Image 1 (spheres, rainbow, N blue to C red):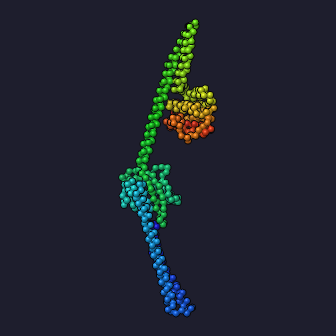
Image 2: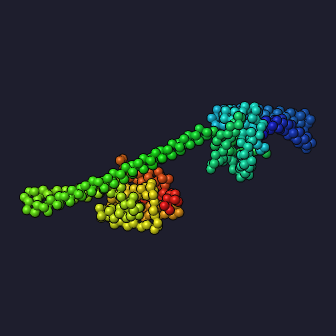
Image 3: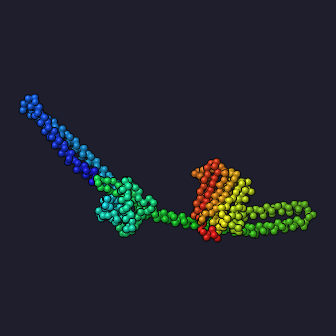
Length: 434
């Protein structure tokens, strides 16, 4: 029973009180006048005049009160009808399906959007059990959810926040929904109102986006693999062919110098200059080869390559660099070994460029099926929430390499407090044992 029906039932009682109340008062006053007449010796005509005057006044007051009461009730009724019309218009024009059920799970409200979503006509749905809109396997749990909601004493709640709810159309098709439920009471009756939305399109879009991201991830991983293979090939050729050819040429120049001990000073000077140029070229070739891909990463594994990288970093920058390996058996195959090495390499490059540090601590460890790389420096630090500078891709590259292998990248830093980078990459057990 709503407020409108309650006002309709209470209105007659109010009118009866206004009509008969003055009459009761008049009867009491008449008795009072009769008593007064006996006490003060009034005549019958005087008593009748006083009674008539009092009756007229009371009737006039009654009419005025009755008119005011009816006017106020008419205004209230019109306002209530207007409010109900507005609410009804909102419910009907809502883009989301709105369904109300009573305490017996019978449908008492079914708006136009609900007709469109579920495919049922309103006249066919109203009075039916809510089970007709739910897949059979969810009906019992849904009923229990409604009962628990009613006992909890709350008036509104979002349903299925941790999982997807499902509805069923008239043709039997199941579809995902998100919904919120509210409870209000009409006397002794409880009405549950559910506002729900068909999220089929959103689920499909999310799935398409997930598939697209997975494809991009696989494509990027393949591109990284191809690039590393090409770097390895070029580094091998530089080391095995060009560097060896330059070394042989250097030996030949040295042989010529030995065979011409008394050569013209200009010739001797030119040979010495060639010797120095060859020495520098051989060193540059080896450096370029190592920067492309250190051959010891393929020949000896991750730990020796990391040790070489830390030692080379200290020699070039003068920054103390300490490497700690938590596991004695840390043999990894590609793409994991390459990813960890490249992340370490890029991290040290960032330290050299930006950190202004005097010490770097590197830790490589594995726990079950996860390898963890930590690089921590005592440099000037920065705020990770600051916008990335244009053209700066160092941290982005680290995060991307970890993401391509399903890993996680965390960074802790603050101005003046140094920087700590931690990368965790899940690795197949057979990779750890190979």
